[in-house]
Length: 119
Figure 1: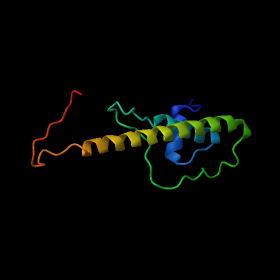
Figure 2 (figure 1 turned 60 degrees about the vertical axis):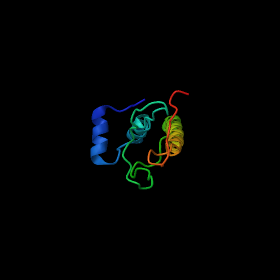
Figure 3 (figure 1 turned 90 degrees about the horizontal axis):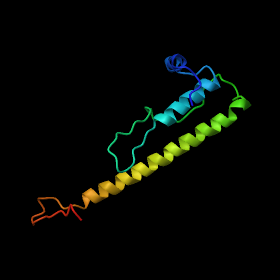
Figure 4 (figure 1 turned 135 degrees about the vertical axis):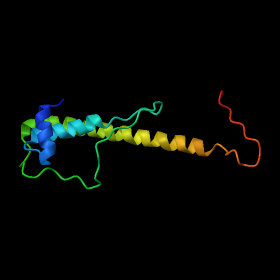
């Protein structure tokens, strides 16, 4: 649910700081939407916004968020929480897959190794 046009989005990225709370929420919505996490059964690559490792800091110079944007901000927060939960699930599945692969004996174990791939 983006409310700004693409040119405004590009201007926001160029300046580094959004000019309005609506632009800032647009950016957060876009980031949450682009945090696409594949299901454990797919091989689709995960796409995430770049992270610089710094702690999140609200944009400066916007003043208090207008009360009229509170519902939208709550929806953005819910989308971010959903994306975070999906990422945690994907990470857990990856750890399980890694453990399963690690449990398969290597071919140089010194004895015959058979891997049942049908059952």
